[in-house]
Length: 110
Image (tube, rainbow, N blue to C red; front, side):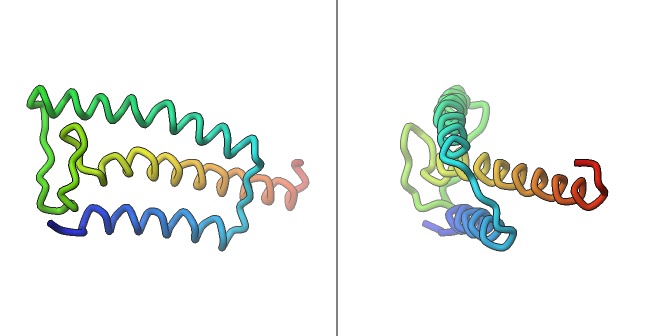
C-alpha cells in the first residue's frame, strides 16, 4: 500500500482550493449545479470505460502506488481522478475567463 496516487489527488484538491482562494474565483449556484451535473454524468461513463478496458486486458492498474481499495477492478484513487481533474479544469476555465474579462475592461474592449 502506498499513498502516491492519493497524494496526487490531494495535490490537485489543494490546487483547486488555492486557485479559487488566491484569484477570488466565485461560482454561482447554477454554475455549481451545472458542473456537478456534467461531472456526475461523465465520471461514471469513464469509470465504466476503465472497468471494461481492464476486464478485457487492454490495460491494468498496479496497486503499489494506491491504497489498495478496489471497486470493480478500479483503484479508489482512479475514481477520484474522474471527479477532481474535471473540477480542476472548470476552475482553470473560470480563471482564464476572469482574466480575459479584466484585460478587456482595461483595454476598453468590454
